[in-house]
Length: 438
Image (cartoon, rainbow, N blue to C red):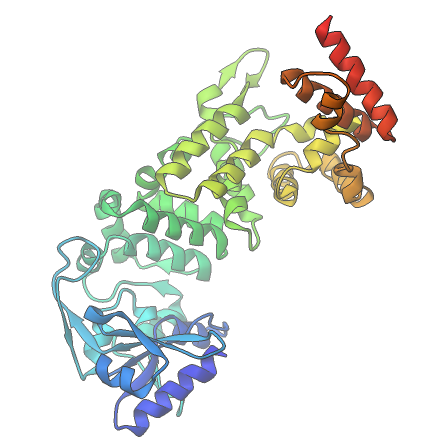
């Protein structure tokens, strides 16, 4: 386990005369009673010394003094040499670093006070050079030192402030918040991949609703997701959406997210992204085709955020299909079965549940589909093929687009429970081909 390996590393470095402490998020989480996911160790030992102490290790940021210590079971702990840093010309990385022996200098170059704490795991002593314990007690995210300098060094820290405040349900210190508001436009200088990863963490780590409220309050939402900012003020028909505009609806959806996959998280955020573009008033407020428009918009948004193509495909499918649930009880059995066998259908079903809870609360279609999913087995949804194209060729027909129509007709009849044998399937297929040739 990571904690045991981290303690072992500290003990080994101490035994060789070095300072070594747990540092950062693991200390913060332990003080909050949260089990850390990762452990980081900070030390005055140089990278060369760390590599010599731990043969199963490799430098992952030699310039920054970071070494990854690995055990045979795949457990890893990052060990970093105390350092101070120079200017950040690119708004991401320091131009140069200097290795230090004083842990206070290492703590002072970090982002937020709650992440600047160190712990001696052998004695339990907490080293606090930046006021992090007081801010933990006050439940505040506060930049270390001058907040504009901290955010000027790495603009992504503005999104990280939002993430920590949302996940921990902390407030952002007023001076830190004001600095983010002044510098918000600089977030556009950060790579799409880094922005994507922070947004995903805000959506997935807990407190997604509060995270997006803070993104808006900080002025960041306009720059990272302008299409989501556009939700505000887009009214909805009150008979279907008594909660209010699209922004309020999506916030309620995010409020219901619990440990979602990344695709479901982005699907929940963007499922109504097409509403602003399709808004019109006829007999009532309407959003005709918003699912289809939203799927196209989502593909562009997630493409700009460099999400992998297979994830983009899944999220756009979630958006494109999310309105189909209202018709499930009127669908032909074959249509319903094809709907239920969409890839990762459990995400479609969960998005529909969230959508219902955040609007009129009616879950009749959700319950209907859940019952169908429970009743139907794999063979019901994907029956074994009774015939194929070779059978149609053997029957004297030349391959062509009509083959697909004939085979789809057979599958539909199977799904409807109308065809059960190879002979019945072949007879149906040949009748389709005969009509097409007439």
